[in-house]
Amino acid sequence: MAYQRVLLVDDEVEFIETLSQRMEARGLKVDTATNGSEAIKLAGENYYDAIILDLNMPGLDGIETLKKIRDQSPDSQIILLTGYATVEKSVEAVKHGAVDFLEKPADLNKLMSIIQEASDKKMMLFEKRAEDDIKKIMKSKGW
Image (cartoon, helix red, strand yellow):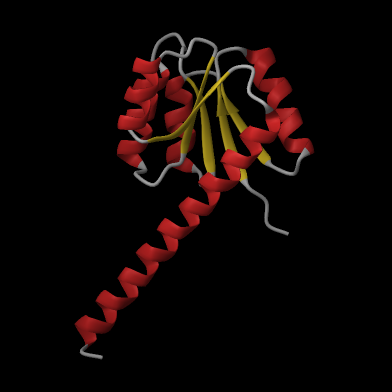
């Protein structure tokens, strides 16, 4: 059975421990990071169906981390979580490629639904890219 792999990023250790346990109990494989730099490194080394990212972190905040992850992995499906949502930050996050924006404490059922949508979208992007690659190969071979 395939499982969805998620990266959970938040500087509040107790929060990510609790949320990751709840997500794993629902069948997800969860990696965690406590800062933006660690998240960027993990996102560059691993495949994730979705990345759940806190907006307000010391050092690299959620928006800067989002930008850097999207630069290295444009298909990354990033969901921002925050306890301090503003319309401006929501718009900025979406402008930089976030697929959704949730306020803490996030409803787990809603979060799981958004993760499933993000995973489905990432798979569609992957399949489209593979199909395009096959077409290029066939064209180059004169088939």
